[in-house]
Image (cartoon, rainbow, N blue to C red; front, side, top):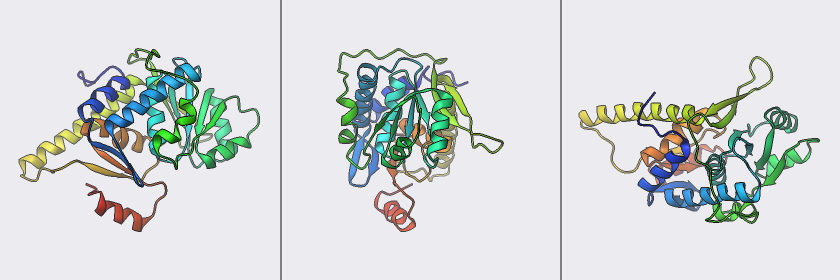
Length: 265
């Protein structure tokens, strides 16, 4: 394990969003958000979950959405509220979504319009579904959640490494997909192991006289519910001060336009 890693992801978010406060973190269409702006809205999300939705430490809260700033702020907010971010496969249909939600006993689920419609068709779901219009700017998209409650005085839990943080789902190649539980320590250590590799590559390129200049930037073109997008792309970006450029759906020409416009590294 990496000894200097924080005990929980909540401390990781707070530290690096402060370190890179004014840098652009998310680009989605015409919306551009700094690390500080995303962190503030994630905090507001966490407080609304605790005071407005009754989320308690260890409650599983599902995200059934395509890649968007809303997905990212909800993930952060769920962890900051002490919940377990449950990353539901966006390609699943009604029965698969309902089966996974039932299996892991979700307290509530946030869904964009297509996933909300699929969940409307499920019977006996046992979880509250809140529809989020992720086509809106982030603060507007999350306004229905913020209206539920929460304020600056809302107490958020102090988390430890052995507290549960996430559930991701296996590919289901040998049967029904299963929810895999990870602690804060596990997610944090995974993130720092990727960072160790990134620092090593930076040192090597610096020694070779070809160190990168400017803000690192990634085109986020894999789904956030998959560990590849979650850990080495999304979570590693906080420490690197890296900009994430989001695409709601893959399009090769649009990708090339964004690579040039946003100086994707």
